[in-house]
Image (cartoon, rainbow over all chains, first blue to last red; front, side):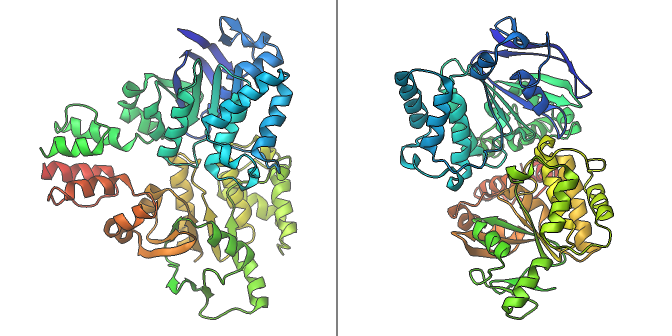
Amino acid sequence: MSKLCIKNLSYESILKDINIEFKENSINYISGSNKCGKTTLIKILCGQIDIKESVYYDNKDIYNFSSYELSTVFGRVSNSMNNTFLTIDQELLYKLDKLGIDRKEKKKRYNEVVKLFNFSDILYSNINELSIINKIELSIAISLLSKPEVIFLDDIFAEVDYHIAKKILTKLKSINNLTIILTSNNLELSTLSDKLIILNNGEVVLEGDTPLVLKEDSLLNKVGLEVPFMIDLSIKLKYYGLLDDIELDMNRMVDKLWK
Amino acid sequence: MEIKINKTLVDSTCINGIIGDYNTFVNDLKRIDFDNNNIIIDKKKLTKEEKRNLHKKIAIVEKNISDNYKILTVYDFMKLYVLENYLILKDYKKKIKDSLKIVGLTNYHERLVNTLSSSEIKLLLLATTMLSNPDIIVIDDLFTYFDIKWEKKVLSLLNQLVDKYKKVIIICTNDSEFVYKYTKNLICFSNDKILIQGNTDYLFEENTSLLMNNKIGIPKTILFTNLVLKKDIKLNYSKDIRDLIKDIYKKV
């Protein structure tokens, strides 16, 4: 079932006739080369840019959402953690205070994110002194405090490797009723997503189940994207009749090639 | 100019890579505090005065722009850099324009820095650094947000700086795929100290275990080739996946 959808969205000269449906509780990956409109699309989806009759959530136009609805239904995490001299504990409490929820609920939500990201040992560390991984986790944790139903991760994994990003995404996936929408121009992480959307010059050029989209290696290369190594290798080996299907595990692939 | 780090010559004829725990090294360069990493410039130990002058010779392309500067326009940001670094430029307005043009940000003068994309911010930082016409350019994590097209464009610009203008380029990154493809000389840091240094291909291909044990990523083509080599099949190391496929085809 699709709760969030985009219908006939065009915006200035950046986005053209976009139609996308996002399934509930799924991981959706939006990719494309630099300046293809990824960040603008995220800004529109989370209501940061106002557009009428283009983005619908639960069959309602998000243009008519109250500001509180926009900030609690959608959580946006971007790649810049503001300079702050607060500790993790202070930052979380500060954001919780703004939400206007009762004390019991505040405590519950605080404990949930601290547990999810194992913050207990670094709760009183200054944010400026945190590692990049902890800063990313904190940015996500702050967004999760409002219990969003959709979370937008705008190119936040660019500075960490695949395994760390995978670990963080797995934690997010464990949260019930959360739809995840990520952007990146690196397709390596897309193998963890359910749906992959490729933008080029503001238009959707490919969309669908991730494994199927990743098989379109020629088109992906044409729009300036690099297909993940194991998929690229599988496709090419398949072309030469050396492999039957996509193989993501390196050991298994070597065993298949040299039985 | 000759630059040595822990008695190793940084190659001024190619792009140099630095990988691993390099933050202390970059910070030392920023403060021109070379005692930790024992950096020797032009074969001599530098006096305090000479160290200070080095600020003009070394420029560091930072990872990001501080939030305080993001409310400025691109032009004002670059002008502020000129003023804060006491740069003596004949026509700084033209220099700013030229610098932006070189990195592909023509007509960006009036744009607010906070409206730029992550990749555009990286280009702006590179353009700003070039204003000081440094001899050594240390680039901290520049390529993170670039797609292939921009990656190649900026690399061609950096190669031009090496070949034509004899600049020493040092790229600090933790992207092993990138350094394997594009750098010829590599310095690997572990726990803020140099672990190993030398020819990039040799380091990755012959020291895989050492690098992995020190949490340095290994390019996937190498990992794949090593797995095949373990089966006593002589597969050659390749940087390009197409070359790897050709070799697999011959050896299967």
